[in-house]
Length: 66
Image 1 (cartoon, rainbow, N blue to C red):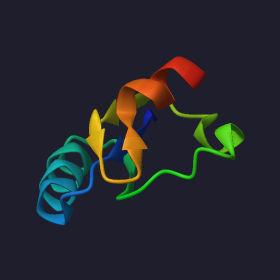
Image 2: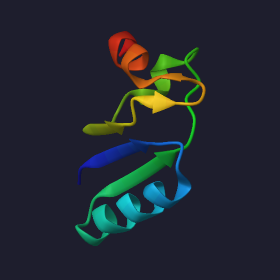
Image 3: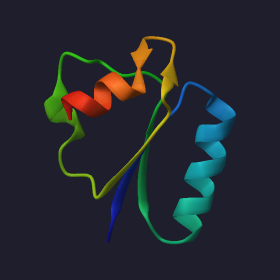
Image 4: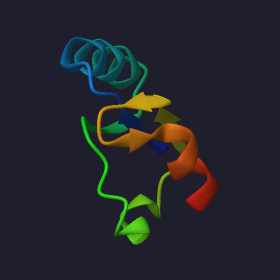
C-alpha cells in the first residue's frame, strides 16, 4: 500500500486531505511543520504533498534538500 506524507501549516487542510486519501486506502501521515535538520525522516514515502509557504521555512528549500 502506498504511503503519503502531507505537509501543511493549516490543520483543516491536513485533516481534509488525510480523510480523502485514507478513504482511497492510502497510508497517510501529516505534519504541520518541518524539522529541516533531519532529512532522513522523509524516507520511505511514495509521495510527499508539500506546502511551499510554511511558517518555519520554504517548502521549496526543503524540496531542494530532498
